Every structure is written in structure tokens, then in C-alpha cells.
Figure: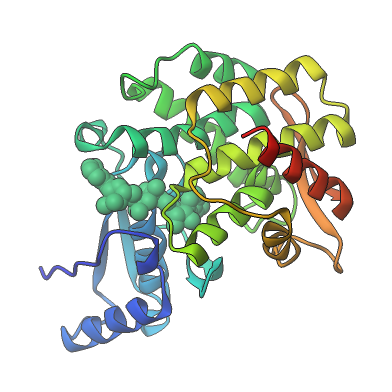
Length: 296
Ligand SMILES: NC(=O)c1ccc[n+]([C@@H]2O[C@H](COP(=O)([O-])OP(=O)(O)OC[C@H]3O[C@@H](n4cnc5c(N)ncnc54)[C@H](O)[C@@H]3O)[C@@H](O)[C@H]2O)c1
């Protein structure tokens, strides 16, 4: 068995690192019967899955996700890929691992920041599909302890169930993008500014903004919108850099989910229920971004 290591951090999800890994596999004489074992956070499961799926037209891989975010989200559902410059997950493909092993003990060494980052995606699973899960998570003291296996399992089940009905994200799976149109823009801007922003923090801020849009576009009750904003604000720190709404809009307009130049979001109609392919006006997004900035 041989091991390959990559630097921690989003910058490893790049074509340069991928190229080094392809060459390393080739030098190690990996062949089509080789098995790639990905041990790490979402960067590793995304990058390693893509590496395995493209080397020699695809070799088998298995995942041992070690961060909470990778356990409940990145390693579930078969999306693999890398970033193109500052554009998140622009290059990738759908390929399921042979096996995914989720072990709670990995989380013992995880920092509070990384725990919160994963927790954001768990909250999202509750918001888009299961109000009880959302409530359980809101009652959980994530600032002081790791979610237990039962909560992790529930989150994995919610995502797996959605993915099962729409592996290639042609319909229902798009609801998992709630918070991501705006969240990915924060994340891309953090890459551009070279100021780290954990994935889940970006998505939490995206969910706040998109909850406000949900109220306007799908009639999400104001009480629910306020609860979402309150929960996100009380758990997640502010965006760690200054920005203009226009800078975020450049990324939002380039989002791969958009249809014929129209901004295409997944939004909530109620707590635990989401809709996809909601076309949103640019002006409304700018207003929400400006509101978020002035209320930070
Ligand atoms: N494929 C998908 O469906 C999907 C879904 C969500 C997110 N993602 C991707 O996942 C990535 C984010 O995942 P992440 O938050 O795990 O990032 P990450 O892989 O960068 O891990 C975050 C940090 O935690 C460290 N770490 C990981 N496991 C640890 C452990 N057990 N103990 C101590 N430190 C540990 C890592 O070294 C890193 O510094 C992003 O690139 C995002 O785009 C993919």
C-alpha cells in the first residue's frame, strides 16, 4: 500500500494538484485493479473521488470522511470534483465510491470551527426536508459538543434519500442547493481574496440570505424566516472580509445552476419543504446582499 498526501485546504482542489496526483499514481504504477482510499475532509473526498474516476477512465475508490462536513454531506451522493480558478466545483463528475465508512471517533480532533462548518449542512438537511431534524439540531448545543451518531445518521439518511431519487441532479436533488447560490459566492470571494472561510460558514450566510428571498418568492412565513436568521446569526460568525454586493453578484451570475442567464435558486416554502428552479430577479438578490452587509 502506498500513500499520497496533499496540503490541507481548498487550494488543493485544483488542476495543478490533480495533475501531480495523476502523475504520482502513474509513477506508482497504479492500474485499473488499484483501489484509492480517501481519508480526509470534503476536499479529499471531492478531489480523491475525481482523481480515481478520471485515472485510467476510472478506478475504484472508497471514502473515510474525517470532518463532520464530509461525513454528513461531501462524501454522500457521489459528487466529485475540483475548482477552476476561484470558481467552486466547476469541473467534476458524478461517481459513487464503492463504500463510505463514517466513524464518529474522527471528530474528536476536529476544531469547533470545522464542527460548526459541518453543522451548517446538517441544518440545511432539516430545513429542506425534515422540520423535526431542524428542531433537534436547534436544540443541540453544537458550540460545546460534537453531534452524536444518531444525528449524523439522520442527516446522512435525509441526503441519501433525496439523492436516491435523482442522482444526477435533474430535479429534486437541486433542493440541496438551498443556501448555496449565495453561499458559493461568499466562498468564491474568499478564495479570490485569499481569506479562508469554511464551506459551512459560507453556506450558513447563504441560507440566511436565501431565507429572506424565500419569504418574498415562496411565502416562507416571516416567523420561520426570522427563526432561520436567528439560528444562523447565533451560531456562525460574520463573514471575515469586507465586500460589495456587486462582487458577489459576479459569482452568482456565473452559477452553473442558472438557466439561460436567469438566476435559478432553490428556496424554502416552509420549514422542512423546499422548491427548486425558482427564478429570482437580480435586483432582489442585490437588495438582500446589501441588507445582509448592513446588518452584519
Ligand atoms: N461533493 C459534495 O457533495 C460536497 C458537499 C459539500 C461540500 N463539499 C466540498 O467539501 C469541501 C469542504 O469540506 P471540509 O469542510 O471537510 O473541508 P476540508 O477537507 O478542507 O477540511 C477542513 C479542515 O479540517 C481538517 N480535518 C479534516 N478532518 C479532520 C479531523 N478528523 N481532525 C482534525 N482536522 C481535520 C482538514 O485538514 C482541513 O484543515 C469543500 O471543497 C466543498 O466544496 C462537497
